[in-house]
Length: 64
Image (spheres, rainbow, N blue to C red):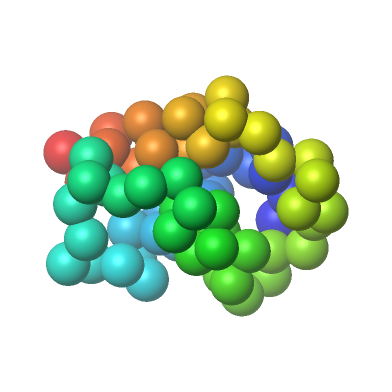
C-alpha cells in the first residue's frame, strides 16, 4: 500500500482500530498507524496534511 491508496488504508484502519473514533485522531497518531499497517510500504516524506485529511475522511465514511 502507498499513501495514495486512501480507501484501502481506511478499511485497514477501521479493522485495526475498531474502538477508535476517527474524528478524534490527531495526524501524528494517524500517520504512525498508517505506517504500521501490514503491507504499507511508502516513504514517510510522501505524506502531507492533505493526504492525512483524505485518509481520515475515508475512515469516517468507512465506519459510518
